[in-house]
Amino acid sequence: MSESIISVGIDLGTTTTQMIVSRLTIENTASPFTVPHMEIKHREILYESPVHFTPLLSADTLDAEAICGIIRQEYDNAGIEPSRVQTGAVIITGETARKENAKEVLSALSQLAGTFVVATAGPALESVLAARGAGADRYAKEHGVYVLHMDIGGGTSNLALFDPEGQLLDTGCLNVGGRLLKLDEHGKVYYVSPVVQEIELGQIVTPQALAPLMDTLVQALEEAAGLRPATECLTRFITDKTVTLPDAPLVISFSGGVADLICSTEENWLRYGDIGVLLGAAIRRSKLCSGTFTLGAQTVRATVVGAGSYSTELSGSTVTCSDAQFPLQDLPAVSLSAAETALPARELAQVIRKKLSIYEDTAVLSMKGERSPTYEQISDLADGIAQGVLSAPVVVAVEHDMAKALGQALRCRMGQGTPIVCLDGIHVPEGSFLDIAAPVAAGAAVPVVIKTLAFS
Image (cartoon, rainbow, N blue to C red):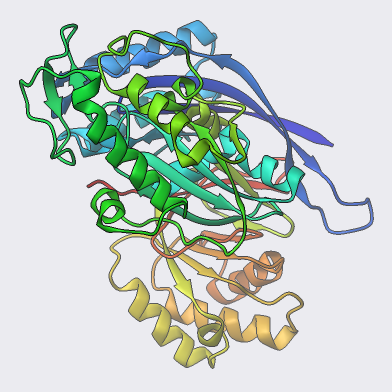
């Protein structure tokens, strides 16, 4: 049995805005006599928009009307109504997330794009989506190597590290990109990013004058990749954190607008009105490309492909959804440790009440759970949750397949009519937010998006 859902990805980036429409095919991969195991088995891109320059009213303000106009037109071009969209993500990336009206524009786009197209921002999620959209995780698994993926855009370079099994190990972000400076056709600088100290507004520059800045930006990337000892140069460009590298050889993978320029023969360094051509050439000459490196299967489109095709996960072996109204959106995650979930019910309830007290609305209780829980473990955990959660709906996410039993136990304790959503097979990190769509595949699976909402 298979079922398809429509997903939309919108990437509102420092330089460009793009949209894709995908079809995600859900299948039960378990044998007929075992517990269902629902997976997204196929991801097919149905429509790719042209690459639009992100409209701005000023250096600090997005042109909300023009951006929404682009997306409306692309829905028309794709021949799809927002009401048909069941999942996906609108993500705001790079320096665009720092614009004065970024949050308002993102909210407007989310409402325009469909009921369950979620609005997200934050470098950690962007790093993962860009890397998956570029195929870095698949490259790592197919070649049995560690891969450090660098998605180098207009304002930032998002880093994602994968192990030889294709599993994500870490993410990071640097203020390194092709539009840290904007230039007119004569090389006069009319925009300077706050992270750039070497160049002044109004200065007329040449490739020779910009060479020291290119060296500095490349040095920061090389230090992040472990090709140089870390210095203050790397610290200067870190947005929140960089990756912790393994003691093993790395393959470096690239995507983003600058990735298209790494092996380019473009001779007009001012073609894009920024430093992207110079930065791409400097990366090609650097230690980053002296060993094994690869360009992603998607480069400039990597993030939007990730947003449209890889933002959605499935919770699905033994879910419980009772009396809940979907979609549930922007639910903050509250993590319970293994030691806390093993507490007696009364003590667990106190822990839950304390953790939930900082939130006005519903939050997700996230925990690892037990691989083969006993009746007593399920009963005690349900008692603690039922006593600790004082508002509805009750939303629980566990990593192991125990959500159906736990959900049924909660329903017995909280009574009919109390909205209960109990998911399994997903890990929701502390500080993340969860969006939950209506069940699919005859109720056997629930599409979810785990996201960050971070504006700096």
